[in-house]
Length: 134
Image 1 (cartoon, rainbow, N blue to C red):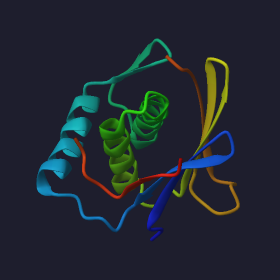
Image 2 (image 1 turned 180 degrees about the vertical axis):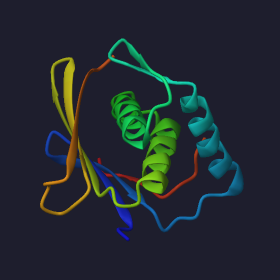
Image 3 (image 1 turned 90 degrees about the vertical axis):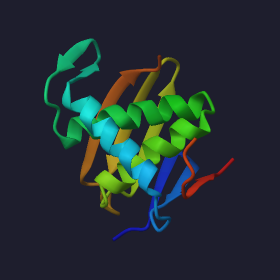
Image 4 (image 1 turned 135 degrees about the vertical axis):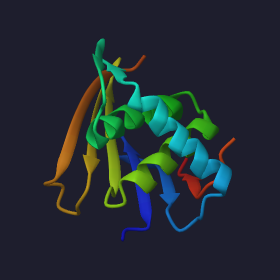
């Protein structure tokens, strides 16, 4: 299993999350609560998706991760990274490119970048293995 989850924005690594850091019980419970909340449905790009699958949840959480990075919200960054790292153990990178209000994003599951999930959207206290790169 890959032990690092890296967030790359505009070609620069900005966050590195270490999966080897064990989350305390209350933090694992928080991630479970996030899942229960998402069980009720997700609104993305103005459309409600009832009973979202893991792929939709990952896109939703990754969008919130990028927004948290842009607003320098460390606790939200940590929670979003923890969710993605624990729910998607094969996820290696989140690559985001910003162009004005638009952000394109790839969820990278392998080294050669052939197994990605592309996501487009408008930009609109967790102790973990988070390491900011800036």
